[in-house]
Amino acid sequence: MKPATAAKKLGVYLEATPAEFREGMVSRAELNALQSEPPQWLAELRRNGPHPRPVVAAKLGVSIAGLARGGVSEPLTTEQIDELRKDLPEWLRQERATQAEVRKEAARIRERNASRSERTGRPRS
Image (cartoon, rainbow, N blue to C red; front, side):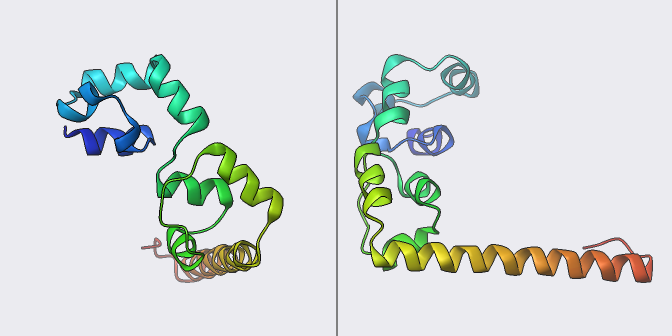
């Protein structure tokens, strides 16, 4: 697979990986080996970053779109993420509230669909 795909599956920012990782192809066996026994560079990236947007969003409890609305377009380090959590700027507070509402609505819809399925005897789709 392409290095970008492997980096995405590993949850790391491609540009921060070693050159030999970025320049070569990664087999499924190599990916499995990286996941099961991460080398030092991978462990370090996962621990300290810089982290790609999906990881930053998850660590902050917001969506990727919420990051963009908050003006975060670059990868962040763990230290920068921790600082945002500590300072809790208004945009982050608002995006977390939005994300909580989205999750609550998704749960409500799942429950409604499950209830409808039970009444009609048809499996959910």
